[in-house]
Length: 95
Length: 298
Image (cartoon, rainbow over all chains, first blue to last red; front, side, top):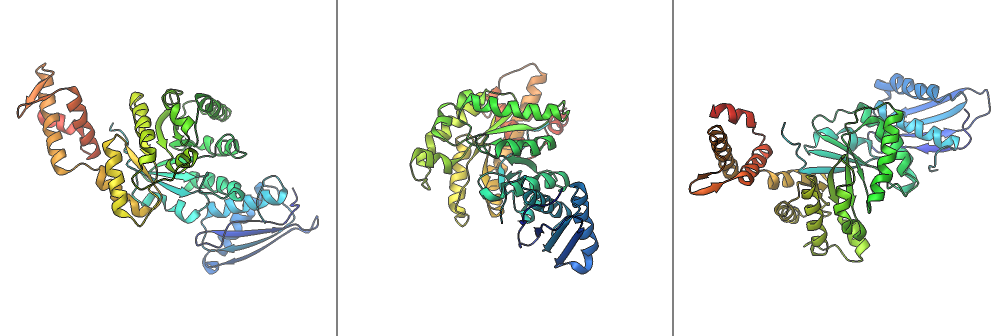
């Protein structure tokens, strides 16, 4: 599936993560940009979690920006799923 | 097994990961993960997915976990059920229940989803929330509408709005509704849970209101801040004197029961089945194991 719209999910509150989705041209691949308050400790884990959700939702081409404030895995997963579903237009959301 | 205590039920906004992941350590008897009024209309999807994920991973320890879904007459109610029912939290709370038909409608969906997920012996119970004058009028029928309902709760804020009155600290405007709902709950052996006390800085007001609702039969109260937990527990916990007296009543009851005596006296006062039942309730609230008393009596 390919994101159609810009979308976001999450907040900048502690223990949360803000995910921004930008559609890209087909066959561009995935670009994941992460900033986090715990980047030195958990960059690999955060990246792995995001990629897992993108795999599960079969998203191959996307620009995803993550601004993390110490979110746990289940929160990261929830925010990525919400943002992707909003960008696909299959769920009402915000931007 | 002793009945689960529901003295304190703390609302936690369903879109707040920090609060949800700490829900098990607030010390309340139950947490209410809220997908309804605590979530903005444009964040309903985000909260639903977050709560679904949290239910699968967070350790809530001994805290009972209830999810308040949106009303079935909103665009969100059915989607909430689709995500939450398969996970079988301890209970689901249905807001603004007004009629038996409302209960039948959401229970039909609950059972359909459970069937689709091969949940043959569902453990999840149902809390119905009475928040309108119509709901108050129909509460006896609602209480008996489905065997999986195990608690009724009153929503004071919405009820006063529906009645066109202002909610006052003395609660006089919702007093009739409180008592009617309590009686309906008692008639069908359900827990009856009170509405929130909105002023988190007024500890004395919270204590007074909790003392009142305990007197008229509520099993517990909904809370909006962890700071309110201790006050509510202090009110609902039995005093040392009550525990000693109840211990004596129950011990004498066991002794007399063995001797084939149903009604007896302690200090010149008659003890019959209702007195024994009250003593059992006090001992359960004090976490005293009845079996240990039975053993000690021999």
